[in-house]
Image 1 (cartoon, rainbow, N blue to C red):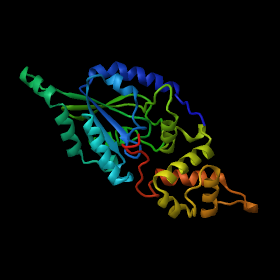
Image 2: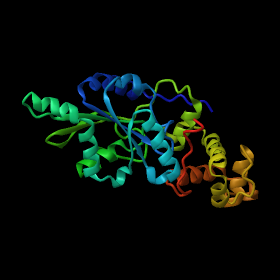
Image 3: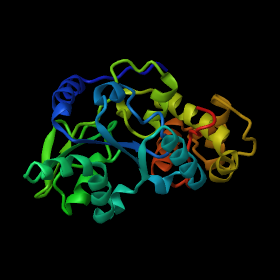
Image 4: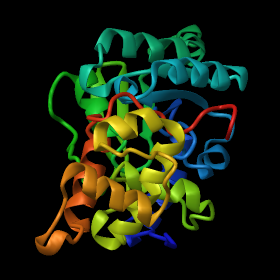
Length: 281
C-alpha cells in the first residue's frame, strides 16, 4: 500500500502558512499523543525557524500513561516546551498561562517601549488532530469549525480569544512527499487521510500488526484472538473468527472487520494505546 495524498488545498495552505509565519509571535503545534512522531509535520522545523513554539500532545487520555510520561521527557530533552492535553476538556486558564509564559519576552519588550502587545499565535498540525477543538475550548464557544473527518477547516482564519490574544486556525497540513510510509500508514489509522482513497483491508492488517506488537494481550482480549503471533491475512482472519464477522457460507466479512477495528481504535475502545515509543523510533 503506497500512500501519497496531497490535495490541492494543502499546497495553498502551505503557501499561506509560510507567508503568515513571519507575522506571528508563537507557533502552537498540536500532535496526537498516540503517535507523537508520525503526527508531527517534519516540514514545520524549517518553516518555523527560530519562532517560539509550544508542542501539545492531544488526546493524551487515549494514549498509554507511561508512554505519555516518556514522550514528555523525550521532547523536553530536545528543549521543547511540551504538554499533554485533552482538547475537548481543555482548561482555558491553563492554556492561556502556557501562551503567556511562551510570549512573556515579546510582551515585556513592547511594554518597555510604551505600548500594549497583542500576541498573535498560529495553531498548526496534521488533519483531524484537534486544532479547531483546542481553539473553541480556549475561546469558550464554537467559533472554529470542527469535525471527525480530515479537511473540515479549509482556509486560515484569525480568531480573537481576548483583547491581547489572537489565534490563527489553519487547515491540517501534510507534507508533499510521504517518504516515510510507516508514518503515513499510522496517520491513516487516526483518520488523518480520508478512508475513501485507501485500501482499507491493507490498512486494517497493518494496524492489527502494529497492535500485535504493541499490545498483544489487549488484541487477544478485544478480538478473541488466541494466537497473537499471527500476522497479515492470518491475523485479520483470526479477528473475523473471534468477533464473528462472517458472511453466508462462513466467509470472512472483511468490510465489517475493517470498519469495526478502525472505529474502535480511533474511539479508544481498545484502551489507552500508544503505537510509538521514544526508545524504538
